Image (tube, rainbow, N blue to C red; front, side, top):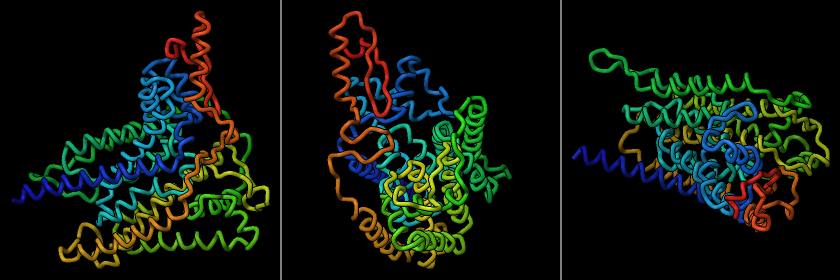
Length: 459
């Protein structure tokens, strides 16, 4: 009977993870809109596509911009196997599915920190709830690394209970570290998988954390070597520290509540900085409270996610030479679009906030942590979790029901009416190939770049 109960619990947990991943993928796809979901963006139609055409499947570990992009290149290779006119749709669907898989993994791996399943579902749904996600980082492979960065702390800190789980988690760790170099920020969390851990029978040490540790350190080392050996265009400007801090308040922090950075700037111009500072203080108070009352593992996860959010924002601005006068906002700044770095930083910050909320609800329920759950308190925790999920869902999704046919603004340089779509540019290229039998390649336009596609794939 006990074995049957264990199997049933495992099956239910697995089905819950699949459901969460499916919902996150579908909501992410829905929020893109019909045009953006069929548009090829940035590296997806530029570097990644060109190198796939030129190098074949050997492009998987080809460096670009100073680091490796394993998972995005796998998605591009899979989409390239389909007819060219379906390439854009396959990329956006594949990207949303990868995000859904990452969300399902967070739902499973976070149970050692956040016990009640509704709270873990809320945490896993962060990629779907983030207001800024459709503006830049969702629906394309070029920015999948940000979602994998948010998965990294849960992979590194998780304590596997079997060698099969440890091996599977090592595969995930390889995919994450060989896609995003900034996972080095979370490497110290590997210690949570080792300590404190009792010895096995006979005094033998428990080495279940070894596969993930070795793979994570190896993947991070590979990214460091590639970064040091691959030339990168130097930044053209250096932002002021005041602008870095002010920009963090205006975009990632306030981007948790409003998707329009221009609205935040206009509010600051009209009413003063307090409209941006107060939400930041609320977020900080929530995080500090979770660190004070939460168990050790939860404290480090909350601190790591929040700290990485600010570190990613700083690194992105300095590495890319983003110099905007956020410290002294003007009406001109109110017309600027949100940065994709704000979405990435906000993703980590919202994950930290969701984790902190789960820790506080668990603590308020008198349980002190998911590992010390009295049997009689489950119903109360579930009721609290359901109330929190319902309230958060209304607050985050209620203001974003306008799903117009136009794509969300992206920093591509193309006006809404001039964004090329593979579905329309591919037939033009195919017609050119059929009209000229001697033509070897044709240009397929994407946003904002393009790629030369062999005519044998188009005729």
